[in-house]
Length: 90
Image 1 (cartoon, rainbow, N blue to C red):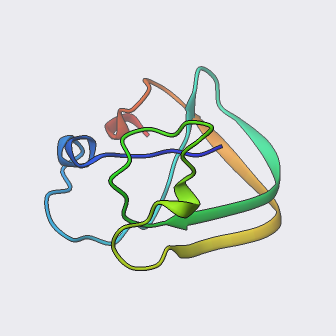
Image 2 (image 1 turned 30 degrees about the horizontal axis):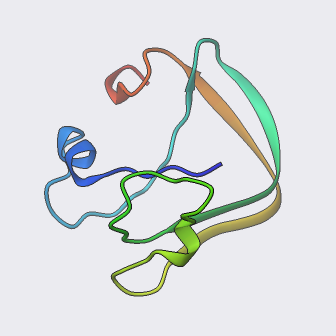
Image 3 (image 1 turned 90 degrees about the horizontal axis):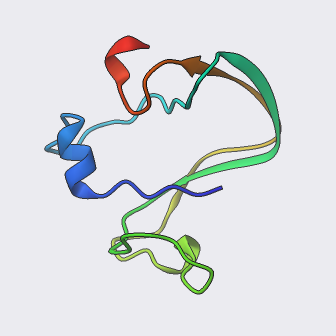
């Protein structure tokens, strides 16, 4: 699974200047816990606007190398129930 957040999406979320990312959350219709195997979270800059079979994020960084912030064999995360893409109700 891969996600790209473009500049306008970050701006809407209130990120308009360099910042630290301290959490990543997932929303679903109901809260629950899930175990992920082989989870790797990599952050980086790209000019891609979406991911396709022929464009992989790993090969399209355009400002410095990617940064792996989490790499674990097994990770349990809890999803948040609520409106998609609305951080205020977490």
